[in-house]
Amino acid sequence: MKQLFKEPLSLFALLLSICSSSALSQTAYFPPAGDWQRRAPEEVGMDPLRLQAAIELAQQNTIVEPKDLSLFIENSFGSEPHFSIIGPVTPRKEGSGLIIKNGFIVAEWGDTDRVDMTFSVTKSYLSIVAGLAEDSGLIDDDGDRVKDYFPHESFNDPHNSAITWRHFLTQSSEWQGTLWGKPDWADRPISRDPEIAKTRELRTPGTYYKYNDVRVNMLAYALTHVWQQSLEAVLREKIMNPINASDNWSWNGYDNSWIEINGEQVNSVSGGGHWGGGLFISTMDHARFGYLMLRNGNWAGEQLISENWIRKLRRPSQSSGYYGYLWRRNFNNTVVPNAPTNIFYATGAGGNYIWVDQHNDLLIVLRWVGRNMPEVVGAITDAVL
Image (cartoon, rainbow, N blue to C red; front, side, top):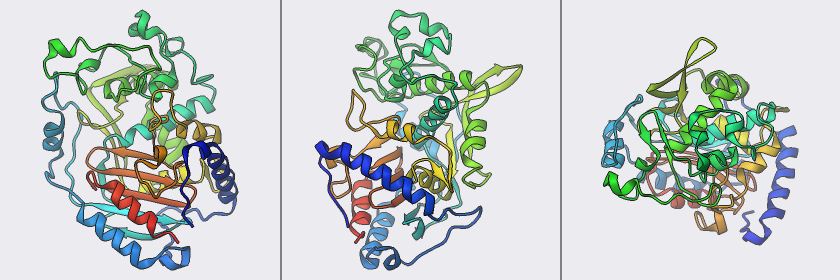
């Protein structure tokens, strides 16, 4: 049964869903490598006719033109100062999607094994790598200053010196500087005129939400220093291998983001595809990652990422009720009105989504659904009986 949560009850709803998720993780089905059991919608409490209508809505709203994603990137960001594509780009071919209810696939379309760019969904994976660093003791607390772990010259600046891991994770760092040839002010600038863009107002770190890929890339760079290895290797070992993901995904940086760590050349990965790069991954591997989130970080009895971090990433930040730790929220039911307030989801340009609804035990992965995600997810949610 669907339920609408109001924001004052969100703490109670959060605790209830976490307790339910923890219990579910002990008895739930977990798919082995290369396989995932299917169930008919009516077997898991979904209306088959409504579900089919939702799938058709998703397919009707799928946009795969231009297939050349370098053109898509240029059309989206090409007028920004200092724009250039400096990371790998792959073409897209078709839309795809997976709907998982009670742990089982109830609907799928398109080629779910095809590897595609995923743009800023990558940021939500980066959040998990940051959580692993705290779980492992490499970072004592996400409220610590980044400069105390990563003595990068930019943190000598008095403004930047106060920035914490939490500020980067909530996109409220207001970090100023240039990384991999991209100044922070050139990303989604206040003006296309560089001289005006440079005059952007800087707020106190932690007080102002500003979506900014340069700053997210700085977070990735700092975490690479903390881990002393590539973040792709960390994600593969700690998360993707244990959840039986394929070997076909990759996490890419830029042509100029190679750094030396312990005598080895390591690519500092990007947090999205704004200038190319980011996570290239299939819909099916997205689903495995999303299912780990649905199960509160537990996979078949093994706690891969702590429940404490899951709680942190899904809570509203000081600067935005819609944003957690590089994951988005259905704040006050304003994104998808008929979905619970306490869901959390990853999103990337072009219509890439991982929607995690613990209350309804529902996971949705969408590729290339454009700007019509709210209608599509709303229709899928409406199929839950």
